[in-house]
Amino acid sequence: MLDAKALRIELGGREVLRGVDLQIGPGWTAIVGPNGAGKSTLLRALAGLLQPQHGRVQLTGQALTQWSAPERAQRLAWMAQQGETSGELSVRETVELGRIAHLGLAGVPGVRDREAVERALARCEAQAWTERRLHELSGGERQRVLLARALATEAPLLLLDEPTTHLDAPHQVALARLFRELAQEGRGVVSVLHDLALALQADRVVVLSAGAVVADGGPQDPALQRALEAVFGHAVRVETGGCGRPQIHLNLEAPPCPPAP
Image (cartoon, rainbow, N blue to C red; front, side):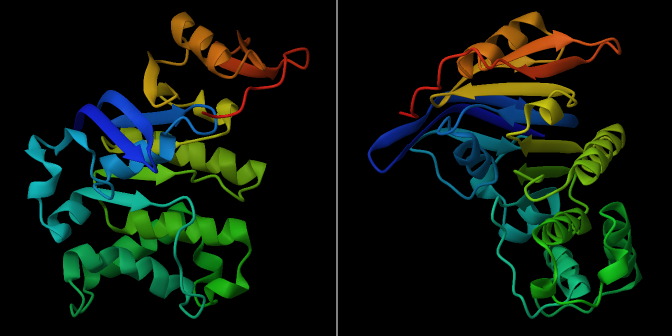
């Protein structure tokens, strides 16, 4: 679906990404790393929102820059860490914005568009407050609305920057289940996550440190687990639980993390 080669990005005189190679296909990929590792910058580059100084990104074999904005939006949905919303829009109106890629700004929604919006609302458990204004919602509720807007595009690839922000534990679990469902449907989900326990539920984990990929593999991969412990200064340890899934434990004896470069 998405192929990034030798990405280098400098922001404010600092090299944020250093020669990143990454291929994304169907399945759920979690990108993790300490603060300042370049996670959000990488996701913005993959979405075409940030132009690298070196390297390239291809979407289904064609340079990302060669797709028109509507074509790209139909294939790739983006959710920002701090999504822009208008407090005067209703929940339904916000989610309907996800259909602009198919309708254009002046298009009239049809049956397929309405069905896509309803499915997205249902998958994000947001049907109960479709007529409420965004400013009337909690942070977690708004987050679910923004995710529904991304889902409404029906794009085969979703790039989500910290989608669990403001979500309580039950809704984080529901989100993980949703990502697994989308992966089983053949869609690609790429999520930047700070919650390592949640990230280890993904099909694939990409560990970023100081702008470079230091590990890339399944959660059960011992090399990936060791890299995960190392980049967080051994403040966490990874152990395999009784269910066979790796689990994260805090290591309270670890020294404080060094400041981000």
